[in-house]
Image (tube, rainbow, N blue to C red):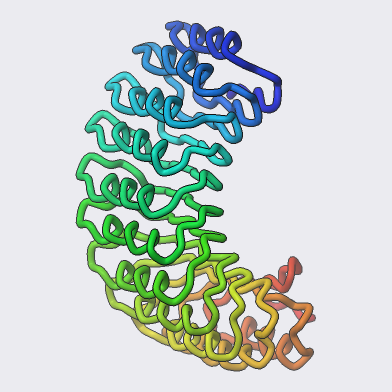
Length: 334
């Protein structure tokens, strides 16, 4: 592994690294170049090495390197190469826009592409970028298992586009990040339809920092109760939930169909009166939840006691309760 973050690198440094990657002596598997002003020209230099038959690189980080369309096109040519070993690529915090992602998707659909994890935080994506990524997920050539699109203004319309690909029988995606994407009811309804599909492989869904409200979570819970739903981890931090959202989630936990093992509800300020609702689900014999995260600063003593009592119940599968950073496990008291 080589870490060269924030080292003031440019074209020449990338050319030198490319010669290393092209060497039959190189064993480099990870390269971290984030926070360097590489520009597209630097990445184009780097890609010469990445396409070498001697290159063994599996993980590449290029966060905040001032990349755009040309850099994405160069990386797409790497992904399309039968010599590429890349499994993980992080392009977050680059102003790629939809056009850059469309370029990248050409490589992602190649039968030679081995990429399993792609991170695109804060790349200024919208509907068109989501549609291009949906076409990748629908491709029988795609190897993508993890996709993080957090902090892009996707809106419900973008997520609806993405869900077309997520429902494809060819889609292998297991982990999806949509934090802070300005989602609401419609986006949740679209995701629920994915969870309800017998084609979906989703195991983790990260929806924190969206103003979902109870109505959005109620929509999502329709999918979570489907016998086809395989979701094991759900993150709903800072989604403005209250009683009704807790009641809907409790009905999921009580369902024999639910596969949920981890649930994060921290940073929701109106949960105290909903905790009793939640505990009903947690004590269900069908509940498989093992880890629960909640905000402790606005929970009453009674609510906290009810949670710990549930944790210590013989009927509960809960093993770990995180109250605002304080972890309580079975046998513990407050």
